[in-house]
Image (spheres, rainbow, N blue to C red):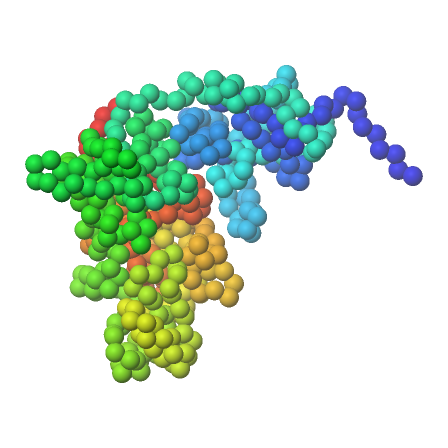
Length: 462
């Protein structure tokens, strides 16, 4: 018989606890207690390594409150270690490790923390078993044993970090305020001291008048005096939203992407023609209407396997892989029978279900990720079950992404590139690129970069 002895000096902690980091000025951060994890970790963005004399230091930003990136605390400390960590998806990456005092309740002790991108996680911090050894025993059925803070106490603690509204008035023109990308942009604007307003495209209407143009919202409220508009337009609302964007432009607001640029990017055929005209390499692409042209159309793009796309497709929807010529004929004729427009494109087999998303802001690639299609799937889109990881792109790929965004006159663009035996090929350019996949893959604050781009354009000074 094995007798289990519990040291009476060990304190009990629950499945989640509040931690305090006085060294960094973090008054409270909720941690998930996980004895299955060896090392503790904390959410960190914009991680930068630098030197103080002969010592390596690290600078990073922490958003201590879940689902609220408008509160941000800048931290810096001496680098303790570098370790290779494998994520739950099996991707190995090098992470920085710091050592700092942490306070749980009335106890303060040193803790090792890996700096990790935990934006997709429920908790901003994970408390691993190394921090618990000889200190705590875990009771997973309870929470906040060492210290509990009410919502009012948390708001009071973080009140000094909330910036007063002394900046620009920026409208986010979209359809769903709860989408990750939309929430992140609003949070980033608030964090930089701007007044952020969410405008639902479908609830806005306009008065066309040379003397007094107006945009009204919901119950007839006149909305004006916006310094800038950030359009995040779903495909089904392109026509109407572009009319609204032109109206805002005529009223003096700066539009981060213009109506003309968005319309061009959404017209896949026009965009493809512009790319070909400007010597941008793309997969061989065909376009036709009559079923009589089907066989020659397939032959023109080097035969099956090939990709068939609806012109209005988005997020990988309306995109089909035809593996044989017979299957391609069937799909093309089926699409044509319902009078829809399609593009037929050569299939780049050597890409192995991978593509690259470059996020371009004001003529610079600010972030890039590699997307890998799920098993049995050829589309690498995150919305189709693909996975994403950070990637270092080549100089040729960087130039291609920047040139593609410039041709469509898009200050903000998601440029999709595929690697082929002929070099990098442009797939498409998205005028409302999502932020979730690329922020999680790279750990970069893309929403903040977008708001900064508006500040630079309007020469806003703090």
